[in-house]
Length: 252
Length: 226
Image (cartoon, rainbow over all chains, first blue to last red; front, side):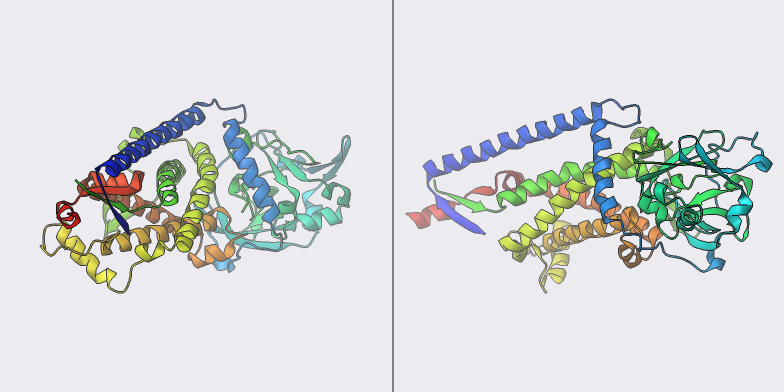
């Protein structure tokens, strides 16, 4: 450490400098406190969060969606490590008046041009199994086993290449009470499946029978159960939890 | 009467130190809002629960429940400040040569025990105090290392597929979350000890962290100067 010996006159100057530093220090404390008060006092928008925080989330989204590499796979596990009774954590969009016999998957190719696909048709496509660590936005995780058709295979099979060129996919439950919007690169990642099996058996009702999404590069909130309609868009489709203050992207 | 001016902390170090304080506070607070949504950590010996993270009175007192979305929003916005400030600190410490005062040397670990014994009034041997004593070197280096740990475990939790290597290093997703939490408890413990030590060290030491220098009366210097 550097040390100097100073006379009284010089020492007074250093004392002054010391006081000045404290003035700046307290001014900065005040500034930081006011800035925090201002931010914290901002009202929530209709999307459940403050403008500045939403912008912050969107900046993170643009950084991490650029870094996104669809060749990076979520770690897979041996089937016997999968939970026998996976946790059921939400029933939004799963009302009881649902008639499974009438169910078809509606793919909106363009306004008025809807492709209605039965479960049998979907099951004819090559089946893949994904055993991965399912991560809930609440913080818990669980290794679970799912079977279904790759979304990218589904796109190819049903000639949806024009739709694939769009930036987002929207999915909605039959009662339209739950809905998600997901970026196309995540949808085309090879582990993203339209899922109709859990632990090698048909999906239970509370896990989204007849068809749900499994998308290991996202938190559980995006794994919509009981899909009724699929849409494509270049603007963000509406997303239930993003309307309630959560990040839209929530990507892994 | 002549006085001695001891230049202790560089301007940039002081700024980064004080910026880190509110930023880390916001990170810890927003982290608790997130943790509440799945509050599973406990310290147990056998079947006895010693500590529950956290008891209900704690949540109520700090207004924590049902604020997961808010916690995540703050956490993932302020993480950038925490990261940038920490990165600048490490780079500055390396390039300014300050690391020489900061990093423990081969004597530090042994000497830090002497510091602890002295501070607890169990030993009368006053340990060597330069800019930092041995215990400070160990503690301050460790807290920087912990910051790196928070960054690593943080990215392992935040992007476990794109940064799958980080998740693997941490021993998996759940382990990364646990380490992330333990490190945070570590910061709080560090903070408590740090504040007590600063209070005990007195005004001049605190002034050095704000103004950069200490001003001491040196009576024997006066005679030398004559």
